[in-house]
Image (cartoon, rainbow, N blue to C red; front, side, top):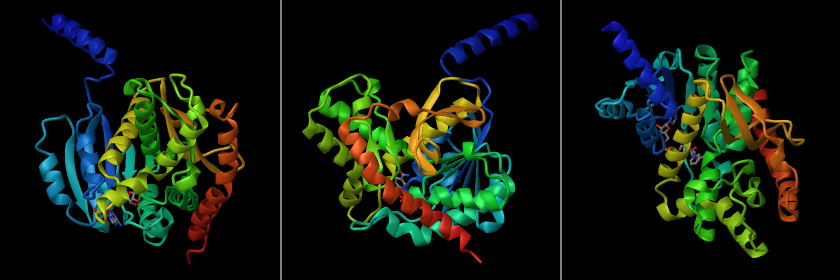
Length: 342
Ligand code: NAI
């Protein structure tokens, strides 16, 4: 009967919401740079999300095959491919979340800042298209140097008159993922329980894991703190060197980016308890952008969480002061890049 079927639907919805699932997937996610080392596994992980109804893949090369391949997975989202500047607008229209891993990765011996010249232009042109086609979307910037590409994106959005600081995110989730993994290994903790906030930025010494704020509470010797901090800061380089010229972190990055996308979708969907670390416009320090824990809501950043910055260890306090000049310079470099465009 009709009433029976409604009751069944209600029961299913109830059960689904208890497990954090929705019966009707309804969000559109666009990935720009979808055929790359990060883009492909990221697209696969997002294809598995029950919250996504449309997955739009954009790249300047090789995206057709990636989309054809993924489209055969029997999960809810419809996968479409877009290539070349003329199709970028259609890729973005109606997107709720835009993820940008487009650009070149590091090779051994390179810093993230060495990527600036190429990736700054790519991010600028892609964010212009976002501003024109889906200015209300959450924008997740993965392309390095994140410390500069996020300020670049902000400037572009400002120039277009659509900047909403609550919806622009530098993806630093991988730093948290690494910190959690390394701390759990070192301290023999159950990985699922471990949570280490990582603040600052996303390059070298600007990456500052707050080991003193690790949950569950654990104690570290000074030596352990220094060793873990340095390992977390250099973890990207660990992968670059292991890959020996074949690129930088892609699989762990895709995993981390997928987690940040899923958190964003759950926040958009009304889940009131979503916290992540991200590099965003911030007033927690004297720097205009800063990574910290944030609370996500339907409108993006609902709150910056200042408590992590209170009661830092002496080492963390010293490291925080030490990272500020480099982070400030990277932010200013990004802003200047857009402002000096003809
Ligand atoms: P990749 O070279 O494998 O892939 C990049 C993709 O971007 C390629 O498919 C390329 O065709 C595409 N692309 C280039 N210009 C484009 C444009 N104008 N529009 C659309 N697509 C374009 O590189 P990978 O390994 O995927 O890395 C991508 C970026 O992510 C790099 O900048 C890397 O440094 C960064 N990254 C960021 C991390 C983070 O934690 N935020 C961690 C690891 C990498």
